[in-house]
Image (cartoon, rainbow, N blue to C red; front, side, top):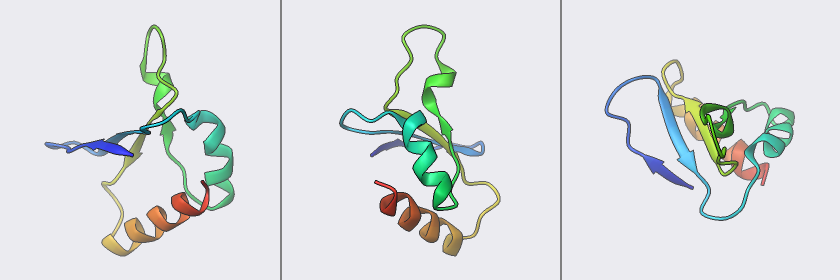
Length: 75
C-alpha cells in the first residue's frame, strides 16, 4: 500500500500498488474484525477500486498495530 501522509483530519487514504478491489476485500477484513471505507465511493466518475480510507482518530497505537496485522492476514 502507498499512503498520503495526513496533515490533519481523521482519515488515512491508501492505495494498493497492484489491482485490488477494496470493496470485495472488505468482506474478508470484516471477518477479521477490521472495517474501512472502500475508496471507490469517493469518486464521481471512474472509481478507483484500489483505494481505501481508514480512520485513525479514536484508536491507540496498540490497536493500530493489531488492525494492520488483521489487514495483512486478510490478504
